[in-house]
Image (cartoon, rainbow, N blue to C red; front, side):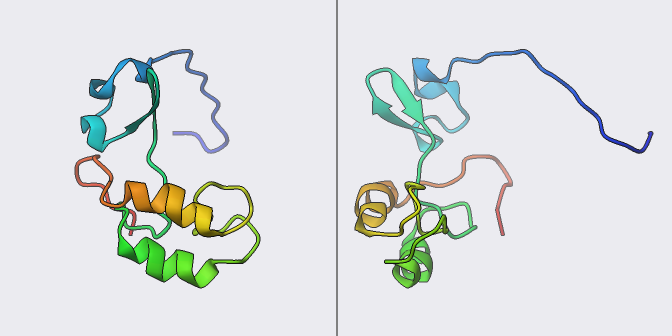
Length: 105
């Protein structure tokens, strides 16, 4: 194999919006966010592949009130606030990565 940069362009498309079976893990792997629209689940700030109390107590509560794109800024608006906890962490608590054998830590 040669040293140096490699550029590869893949022109492919996949429609994730047609239903929960479109991703591994079904509704455990993504969630419905609108009519016919599915998306990734927000709220996993602590790198352990599951949205749980550690994301709230270990990150959000420590960073609440701070500015900047931090792990506790779950809506990525540059501010860690109650909206991150109430609208992103709380309703998604319990979701986790569905990729077999994957952990972030």
